[in-house]
Image (tube, rainbow, N blue to C red; front, top):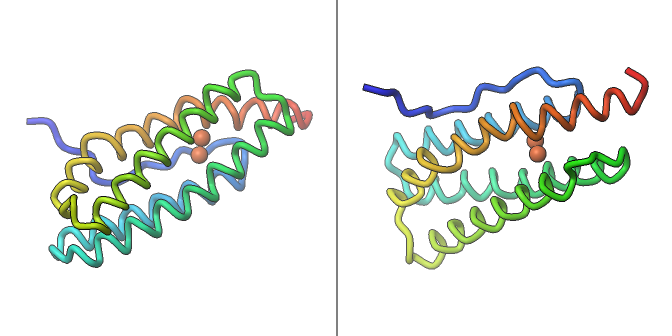
Amino acid sequence: MSEVQRSLTVPELEQAFMNDDHHEAARLLEAVGRAREEGDDNAVREAFAAFVEFNREHFAREDELMERVGFPQKDYHRQEHAAHLARWEALLAGLEDGSLQGADLVSALDDEIIPWYQRHFTTMDALLARFAERAAGG
Ligand SMILES: [Fe+2]
Ligand SMILES: [Fe+2]
């Protein structure tokens, strides 16, 4: 039986602010996990809102870095950020207007959000951190 990944494993990348942000994103996601274990839909919604809000800022910081260093895959990486943020905002709106339940968010977390974020760390973010480090002469 395969285990569902319930939390993020944060890799050490060559950009300190990205690592700090990724640890914070993982911490906020763990708070969503705790709320869901308590079965408290209001707490789940509030914790997920904090995760979405933080990632809006995190993605903007990475977008700015990509622009500054001329990251070759910046269009793709920016689109990934924008598409997932839009999806998460739609989930949040659904929780807020009652068209989605906590259980719907739980499936989205397990099936999309955590797997995507984990993969994003080790692909686009790892490439960006390395490129930015080289661009800075590292
Ligand atoms: Fe990131
Ligand atoms: Fe990213």
